[in-house]
Length: 111
Image (cartoon, rainbow, N blue to C red):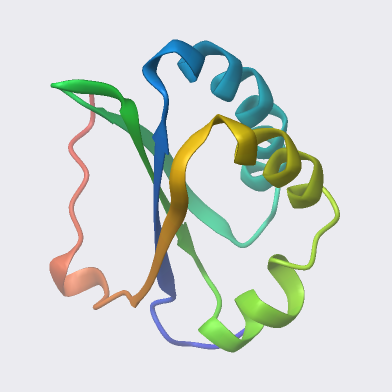
């Protein structure tokens, strides 16, 4: 494990609005598996207010991009989700991996 602030993975799924419930049925198992990973520091899912089929997920990881590619995305629980979700998508998923700046620009309000 590195001493850097980690990375943030931003995913966008564009789902046919009639398939959103089905998408989330397939998404739940992979979500549960990911949040059980010790290096997963944050995971939240969002929907666009004007398009229920535009689904975004943000994952923060205490690892480097290299570690993500070597250790995380190779986990077997991603494959069933990818295979089940692909036919529900209107276009390929978008993925962006960003380096986190660190604690000087991190805030979460207690709710």
